[in-house]
Image 1: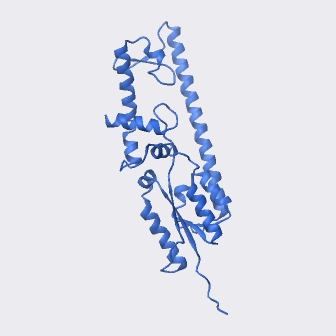
Image 2 (image 1 turned 180 degrees about the vertical axis):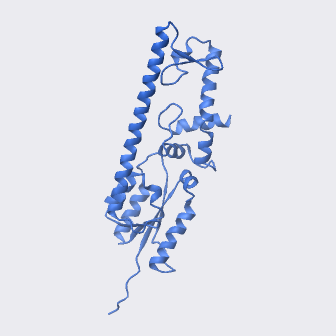
Image 3 (image 1 turned 90 degrees about the vertical axis):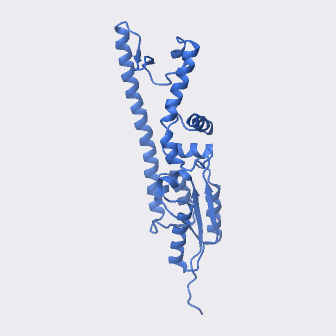
Length: 257
């Protein structure tokens, strides 16, 4: 009877996201190298993964068909799912919980000792951080809204219009929201209103020029993928909401003007 121990089998899972590649320095080839080095260390110099699954970022945060396919393959082949770098996904609670609850063996090349407990803790931390960010954002907006309301009330009490006068001679309502809305523009002529809208939109777009350059240095991301990357990094659109493919298209158009 042979006492030879069979070499472990691996299924690799990589994620493609230009935004994250730029932020972490871990591109697709670097992920492959990290995975290959771990497999060689565990299974021999000629060992390769049974199959490589590559996830392309989409606009849906929890849409990971390649992850599900990789987990099924690993379970059926009694192999270990390997990812290159766990810490770059440590803020993604949905990914971590999917990994933990799959029942498949897994290993991260950068954290080879991670286990179900590690994943569970990371998921809890990620969810807690998400809620804390939401709470801080709401609290900050409430403070700002109250401050503007008090300032507006003081001006009204003095018989003045509740607006803030800017250096260029224009005014801005003392409230949160789009300063170029209908209430603000009704008092202006059409030409001035259009100019105000365009200037405000262009100024807000310019604030994102460096952000877009950092997130998508090659300009290769689709509008949907760039929107997803901006949302995951916590950036809000110029209107204060989540990024969509359409809002990215508008932003790119203004930055190209």
